[in-house]
Amino acid sequence: MKKKFAVFGNPIKQSLSPQIHQHFAQQHQLEINYERQLSEQHRFNQDIEEFFKTGGNGCNITAPFKQMAFSLCGALSEQATRAQSVNTLARDSSDKLTGHNTDGVGLLKDLTANLHLQLSGANIMVLGAGGATRGILQPLIEQRPASLTIINRTIEKAQILAEEFADLLQINTASTSDITDNLPRPDLLLNATSAGLDGKLPITDTSFITKDCCCYDLSYASKPTSFMTLCSDAGCSQVYDGRGMLVEQAAQAFTIWTSKEVDTKTLINDFDQLNQA
Ligand code: ATR
Image (cartoon, rainbow, N blue to C red; front, side, top):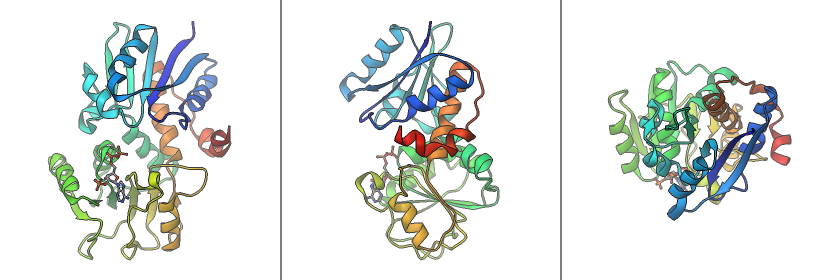
């Protein structure tokens, strides 16, 4: 019987997860069923329960349900515990449901294995202090950067995150409207805000961005995001979107569910075709 997978979110039409996971399954001649599932806040827990009751083997969780998924899990991976959010649910042979967060590891794989960036000793700056940032802090810290700075429109949220991760690293914080010269100039600038969803820019001042800074938007689109354009206009030549992270986080989830490793390079290279399919 075909294994049954799904991705739950709202909205969900735009999700490329079904195509990505079918691609992985083909690499192993596996036939799987992978569907997009639209859910609602008031029935999310029920939807998940129903999915697993009716034979679901595993599912992905996307916005806005990652924190709700975290709350409903009996068991959690270390990354999910730190991130306080879950993007992958897996049912083991004894029917136990475990929550994982593969976003951070997915990002790290893209930055280091695909883009060959050296993060150890680098000054890293993250824009945003929401769920996306929470999911990537631990794996970034594990790379031993020289500094890590969180910039957020609402500084208090950046400060709360810094306190929460203070046992791992002393994190600098600043408000978007006050990115001072005292902060380390970033070698890597990550956009983890949701500003682009509303067609807005996460920052307007780009004077702190040097030309050799690598800029990476955790979101992706068929054309460069507004953040990517901003960075290119500031003179940066290394500017990326989050397609690699998307494929890599999916690969981690696929391995959790099937214990099989997958090739991600082809899919990342052919991503535009996937996006148009
Ligand atoms: P996600 O799970 O995608 O991270 P979130 O938890 O709602 O979503 O966090 C969204 C992040 O994007 C926040 O850091 C938010 O800033 P605030 O904490 O000040 O709300 C940031 N953000 C959203 N719209 C933004 C905008 N127009 N300009 C700057 N930052 C923005």
